[in-house]
Figure 1 (spheres, rainbow, N blue to C red):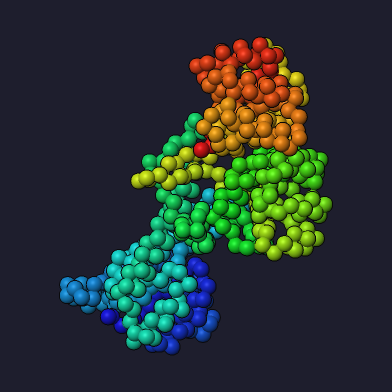
Figure 2 (figure 1 turned 180 degrees about the horizontal axis):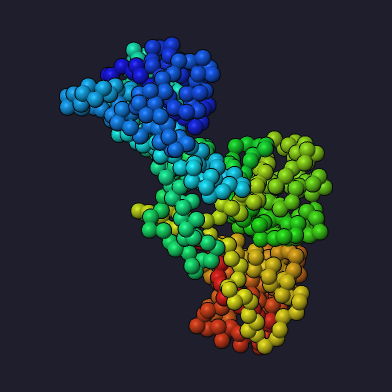
Length: 520
């Protein structure tokens, strides 16, 4: 194996770079570097050769051009077992570069920072870094590439064990990681540029579905297992930037799915709101003058299912509300803030997870949603709308009362987050019964009514929401029998007239939204 004696270091993330560079120098490696990295190394007392001294050309255009030169890329790409390459390197005075340590401009971090201008984003698009990274990774047999500071210790250990050489297997693994690094970088830039070009927006009917879809995401967590103990799983992407765990056991795969469901549902409400989720379905949702009142109303929907469930609120969790929630066993409690006295109380239960959510960051994360299927991915825009552009349309003979309209809108906001077929009975400020995930809409209506009965709730005068149209009048009739006096549904069935006629026959106020919310 080729001995490593010359290294080029140019990093944005300078974590550990001084110690790594010092260790290389102590092992007889000559250092080349650029810009800020060279300055950092010199300030640490290390001897560094500037790239400009090798190229004979200064850095220009405020650093936009510095490493794009044959003296550098010839040293990265030269095949030392190819006589032609070696002869040309000698002819042009090009020395091989055996080790490259590069990571790229902080495009992702800059993108996440509020108030960043487009011009600032453009300047965070690295050119020389990806070129050096890809060149080295392509020529990994002769030029080892390191893009991750977490690899420094292992690389040094192998250099010591191998007389300053790295095995072909190690070089290949490092090269694969390097290509993944540049692929994710380019994916982020492409997504940003597409957004700036206006190819994504909030109007689902005008979204241009991309011709290709890339989602090279960094691994954030290795899970103990997936949905079941025999399945392996990992968490990728920015979830841990939106959700910060403050206490409790490590999150499971199912916890994360439920956290996502609960927080997206709680975003539907402006008033203090509580959403209780079990197996991704809301089993109780309510608003109130404060979180305590909202909790009591939400919990009253179903006093059985919330045990072992997920609770999300949209206000800082005050001590009074925390004491009320603390009365039952919950797997996860999610809030935008936990005051110190609240944390002190809730931390008494060792295993319960406490999650702080950045609700603004959650809203900003909405974009394309992907689901794996055999042989590929299904990709769709996020379901961020509530009604059609035309809004609500009263189709019944009787106009809904103000109270009924408020109850229908509340039920509709919840139904959007319930697995199809979804039926939700509600008052203007709380759910009264939730029927989720049934093959028949009639069954969902029956289950929701049965849950309300079990909780001792009276459905007389409530509103009912159906996430998709009533294909027949039978589902509506079950809701009427349960006590509903108003119904909200998308409409669009060939039997709409039959359903409306049934509503009129029972003096039911019916509103159509023009938009369904299937959740499979």
